[in-house]
Image (tube, rainbow, N blue to C red; front, side, top):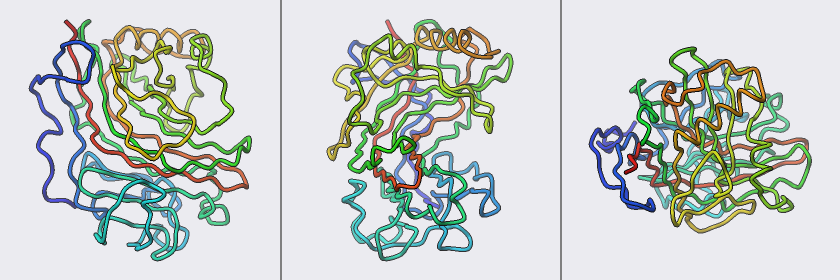
Length: 333
């Protein structure tokens, strides 16, 4: 575990926000910390290796929800192959910065070095393994907020803001019907009046070279996802787009893409009480949603980067790197 962490993860001061289109101020609730390597910052809580939870500390960590079929304990091992071409992150000769399913040949990998984290996933590593019953694969950065009373929409002129740098240089889905590769910013909210949980999604990437152009009508029609039975969570969201009624891209932000890219792209957006209210009303109209319809009732409990693949018999691949993540509550004049 890293002994030196940034002291700005949970600031309580209001500071200027420069990426937004008009002058505002922000209460920073998370900044991506400087981590010293994989040990102590990466966990494998898979039930397949007799663990179903991960530790609460450190608050920011990476989770592998499947496991390593080549190791009895499911853990990854230090590796030396050059994963930069798959993730976009160069870790150099730092042996603590890269762990993989296999030590010396290309395989699914996690990288953690200073202010950046990355992962490469190849479903071929799991297809014939004890993990094959779960046709998904994900290594995710996650922040569980220690403060359980973060209410982004407690005041009418407040918005939730996020900015980050992201690369997605590798995405292979073989154009198969059950093969998917996507990267989504996921916020978990809990209704203080009923305990209802919502995953609020902002989609950065979905591999599909043949996707039709986005339309506002199409985004509204598809914004409510399936109810997650395992976590008892309602899902709602849209791609990051000016057409979306559920998010507001900041000036100069990159937008939703359906093809991979190798350069750093800066994503920045806000979610307003109006956006959140529209999501609640959509959930109410399209499902058995019993939560409050007031945005002020929802506490922000968790954020994670949902960089995930779903696969059939044909292998899929996904590689990404993340840095400079910042989450804040902004005040609008």
